[in-house]
Amino acid sequence: MAASTTADNVTAYRPNVKALLFIFTTTFLGAMGIGLLNPVAPFLVSRYVSDPSQSGLVLGWLTSIYAICQFIAAPALAVLSDRFGRRGILLICLLGSAVGYLVFGIGGALWVLFAGRIIDGITGANFAVTFAYVADITPPQLRGRYFGWIGATAGIGIILGPTIGGLLAKFGYTVPLYAAAVITFGNILYGLLFAPESLPAEKRIEHITIRQLNPLSILFRVFSLRPLRWLLIVIFLYSVPFAVLESNLSLLAKDTLNWDADAIGVLFGLVGLTDIVVQGVLLTWLLKRWGEKRVAISGMGCEVVGYALIALTVFLNKPAPILIGTIVFAIGDGLLGSSINGLLSSAAGERGQGQGQGGSQAIQALARMVGPILGGLLYSAIGHAVPYLGGAGLVLLTAILVNIVVPASRLKIGNAQVRPESEAA
Image (cartoon, rainbow, N blue to C red; front, side, top):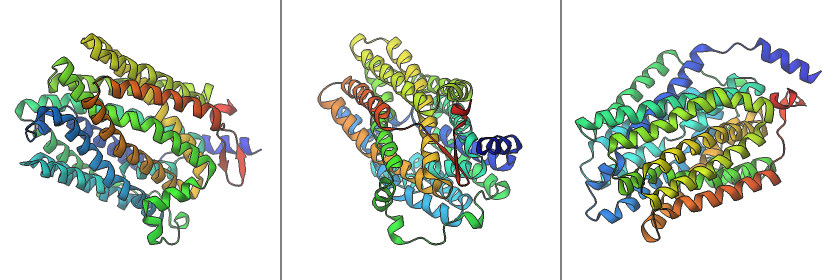
């Protein structure tokens, strides 16, 4: 009976077009803004670093300082969205990103670059609140699908971002930063005019305390629930090497292959194109047949191969391994991110979406605090391939952990438990 009722609810579901358009636009522009920055970041950093051998470490610290600020602020913003609604918090996050891009673009000194990342990081809860927003407006059985579409939208942004960033870099390495600020301000205007609130008053938590805004307190509370605890450990373990790749891949291409911003933009564009295919087409088909757990493990397997191929670039000094490796990695990341988010959303419950996604955001921020610095040290002190070989080993161990400790997901509808869409099929 419960399964039938759930099927009827899914059939009757009609999306709020304005809400989805705001979320997809937020995701698209946020991803494009990140893509605009990635190809030019190593070149901007090199302006203010006298010793080129230290560029990797400085680049790692720039990534880490953003993650530190995000770790402090993002969980609190997610909980605030549980109390006051998603729309206003999202607009605050977007404003912080726009200002951060402007400051980073203005530059003039290394400390100014750090200031830009700090401003953006303090308001860096976009993805946690975004996923909570989507969870508010979609039936539980459709959340994995919509999370996949969000991932595909981000993939489109990632494709266009590096391409536009590479083209704009011909007019100056700071021009992409100004472009990111402009498009983010545009999204703020759209949100103010058209975006509805997703969380009705009766579903909001009644009050919050200072302790709830403490990122460590939020993590301790979320970790007290066994399903969330294991999922957050898994997210941390695969996010550490991803943070290394995110901060270091452009520098690896610059140092090993002598690529410029245009070529690096193409590399990140391949990642985005792969994300579109995987999350927009392949993911839904696989979720129906395999379920979220098996899809997540398959994604980890692809990531292991991808990291190993990228490491091979250092030994062969040819572009083929890094091109193939990033594509294989992107396939794995596309499968992994949305399936883990679906498991996390199911475990968090209807009233805990903000806390669950906030915990996820906090643990990813923690990984981005550790990963770039660790990767920069390994890159400089031991060898350029070591961060990626280590990443392959860590993700392999994570896949084994998932297979052992993460149970098949169950979705809660009202007071009943029903099978997820993948199992019902």
